[in-house]
Length: 632
Image (cartoon, rainbow, N blue to C red; front, side, top):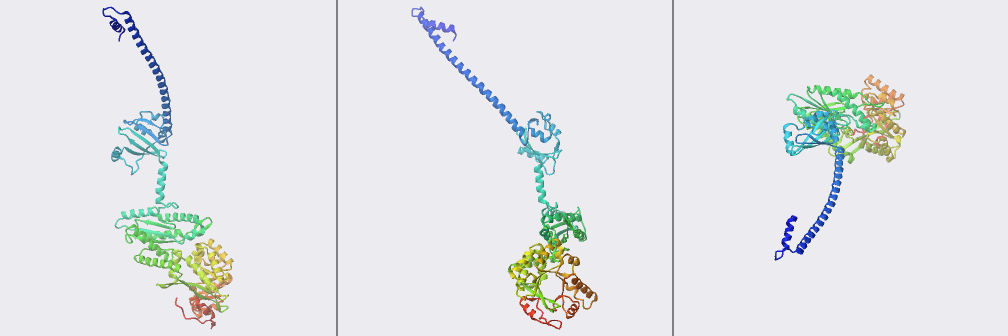
């Protein structure tokens, strides 16, 4: 209210009844009004002071907030520029609004390139790389539609230095986008390495069984009606002995050499794979069969027949191969692989070092063979074997001087199984070690019951040298029977030395040092018998019976026998002639001063219970009175 109006109001209030102004009344009203306004001024002053204080506090808070904001901004910049991932933000017009240092580093951009407002197109032109267009990556209209519907898009960039950058782009509703970028080079290489290892053999670099099956599947699916496809399954003969004697590392190096030779033979037009430890396979397409695969098999055999080098050592290998041809032997991968494996088993059963083509009757034979293998394993567990003994006859003393232990298998259903039917199988499946150990124990136990001067001869397989501790097995057998080592004679064939001469010789020397006699069996039937005689001081050589058949009527055969006996005498080795079946052969060998003979003319192999009777028979008319022939 204005002062004049307020004063006139106060004057009106001070008028008395007679119309005059009461001066005192007016003074009181003025003073009262002044006092009211005075209190209002105090309140205003107090409010002003309060406002000033609050303003000061607010200014302090604002300063603190400003400092905090600056700290947050710096923290954001630190985090943004130290992220291990690149980050970029583009607005709806695809212009850059935000990025970090890692983004610039990943794409090889400069700070000047990343000015605000730079477009994606501008930056793409300046990048040191290009967007990847690898087959299988989603591109085109379908990809764009998917991106719009999902709001997420993946892009890859192949940089000039070989790096792979992956961008995950999140598209917002207004058309702007936020992207994170990562260097996935190592991850991609690791994934590719894993994929490679899943399909390749790490030792040789060849495709593995999985990859090979895929190749066979694809090849069979694309085969033309008149096209033949050959599948060769290869297995290195007795390769396990190399690992056992030379070590796995040496075996691996030799396998690498094998792979290189087979790869060279197979050529780039054929698919070569390593299926397992010592197994390989070749898929041959676009060729006339079986002529071309036969030529391939012969080439591989020639290549692998050359010695392999490991340091200063030479290792000789041989290979067995099974061959199946599509479509005759199967039009499906499983069938073709199985039939090639069946053919391989037949090649190994037939003596190794050869190839066999699949034939329909092989499968039935393999089923019989698998049944025999199962029975043989049971025979080892149940000890269904027994030993028969064939006399060794000393011509100078005209008496039996020992016996050769020969194993027999008495099958509960099959009856008597000939050794030639189960010994090769036992060697192939690894049972020969257990069988050989049993033979040693039983022969020593039986010999302990014979007169002191009678020895026992036991055949030892090459596998017993490579797959067991033969020295320990022999020692345990002798100790258990309390038999003198001088009464035990171990017979080995040339194949034992051929397997690995440098590893076998120390074992032979260790056995000989213990007083055990070592004989070379089947002398003259191998390729290098004479060279092996010079490599080890054998106690005896046993001349194979093939040299005996014609010595009576054939001058050349007689001359060869005469020469071998003289050779043994010159080397200080006793000579035993096997397969003596007639009195005429015996008489001739007596004239040649042969040391020992063995054969049906003396006696066929007999059970252990007949040994005392054989020893009791006196010689008659230059020979022994013979027992009736036993069934064998």
